[in-house]
Image: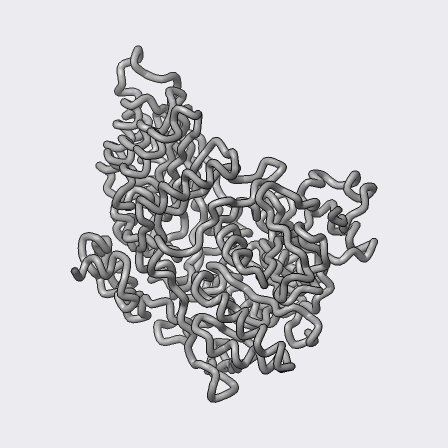
Length: 621
């Protein structure tokens, strides 16, 4: 019988005890005496969010295919359990074995968004692992960071032993094999880390030295030893059709954010939106074969009992055989009551035809992301979407029976004017007008348009990485303009408007673009009580404001300051394939309001062709 780390009386005190007991369908159980490597895979957020993350499911399945490795899962304890664990001195444990994380060989933490940084410190703290890597001993696990936020790992550099830059399927086994080999040879933690730094994609922060200019910018970033690489190149899986994919993903006992089978149809995006980090760091675009997707869909639905399947990608409409996979899913599973969801569709006739096939007569809402209200600004960000595309797509959707539309925009984009901001309201009104052009007897109830605006953060490895952010007051002032303008529209009763929290955006900008000096501010915020900053009900900006003051951090230096094009940026040591020269060129084209064609239309010479595969390879043959 499996032991439980939490006693019954503690489980009765917390909301949703199923978050902590494990034993779910398809969870992998092994005998700890029969394995050589224990790997704790962590998502630093609540169970329901972490269990919805495909990346962890892929790596969990991949690692557990080896008999000598047992990969287990761990998530952030919610705020009701956290103080109990501290008071009772209960070390953080994995779900499968309920063993303390501190006794494992590896703790792998996926870092999906900046607002989970204080949760990472909570994970280390509750695990009784020293927060700073320099304080760890031979008995502590090797703490690895992975995921999109590691494309600027510097604010977290002091807390991790190493970072894995890129896709985990390629070098995770060589890294574990090296650890196993060096452990058998009696080598030290330092010796392992130094040797690990030579594996492609592995960055060991303690082996690099950063110096600063008087103005606070980086003067140099160099390895401490000659055998440590000066540059770290991201890892990419080029053949997505013959690699690891979980055919029996773990099924939670409680409802989670994505309670469905997730079928990743491709990685990367051909579009080249200039604000989008994912569109740059995941290049080149690579597709999974239809035959592989069919097999995975069948096996995953059979092994989970889920009644919905979601096709995952940055831009589903661009998958070359979208119609083929959708038709297969409808023919094979439609009669069994399996729903198909298609996020990330473009607003065009083809996508709407596909949506018609998969949505029932109730017609749930459609989501469009014009990102900017005016055509001028859409050209600046290279959205590749005209006003005619948006209005025509909306009309087709309304004619097809939809009456609910969600529109996503950004405020604070480079070169934005007041006229661009007002155009958000005008565009929403024009879309509503398209609905009311339909004869009354043919309408499907009242039109509902929800306009949402987020605030723009210039992310690393985008053409906008050099630009300044707006201040909190500027962001809120722009939201007020949109709100006022919507109320002035003829169809304002059909339009609902909401906007993101400005202080969260400012903090995201600091953490996304910060350097190593930001680490001490993260620690101070955590010590002030910052935790679950991604959740509005638990986010308290005053914890961070106090941390800024206590650590003498100049917030404007990291957020509102315009970077010089020749400045050494904290993430410059990482090679993502897309060259800095290309990003500079795209920044110039943005200022000139010039569109760059998508990757299928023509190659823009971004540098990703060096991977000799995916869309780049197809375009050259």
